[in-house]
Length: 357
Image (cartoon, rainbow, N blue to C red):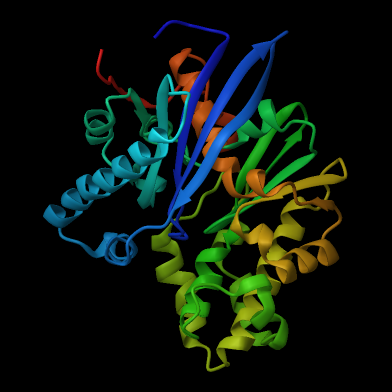
């Protein structure tokens, strides 16, 4: 693709909290060496119940069923894309898709994001950029988080950026370098507990607010080995299932008290992760930014001034940044930072499937 100073890109994000497919049609332009963006349209499509159940159980599927799910998810994604783009007067130069993370074990060189790029290209007729993580993992990195270069180049006016998705992750500038890492489980844990009360999620953290902190559970969660790791680190569903969830299931406390305790745990870990950082402002996005009680606890326990932006940025920041990662990939520029992931080198990751010519 021709190297240009402006691009129109559709960014796709499918998060571990299984909320659905976020789509953000963005225009990027490079002016005086700085990138600017505008969201032209954005929309979230909720996954069908059966597909959502399959995604939740993806790590337990046979190899055959797993590969089928990769294709089936892409078929659904393509349907959503085509419906969305049919309502737009502007068409994207290409689509940048994060895919849906299933396996993520970078210590053994493994990461997998499904939502087959070839199927997306065939069904939409538009060039697809996808599979952003595997090159970094092959280079010895965590393959996550990937958004920090977008934080740096698009949201650099904030001293820190915190995303509250299935997991919480943070990025900030330190000694002229971008530092970032996964902090803790977030909506994955809160939704797991809310589901036990037959709620899809705990709206505004209202149920957690009624609970009491279970001290022995809080101590167990804070003592998990992950929190002692220094430097680049990332979390996956396998870790949640094998360690964090076991602590929750092993407690005899009420679900309300568990929700209160996990909320405190998340806020404590974020406060510790941001302790000692220079600067005052922290941009907070992702579904957890709508959890009023969680935000209150992060503000109370931490030292930063919390800034929750407009709804569009809250809901679609990751889709926006993956669209931007696609721009960098098409330009052959670094879109993954070794200082963030712990890889041997910076890299320009992403597989490209050409659409119709």
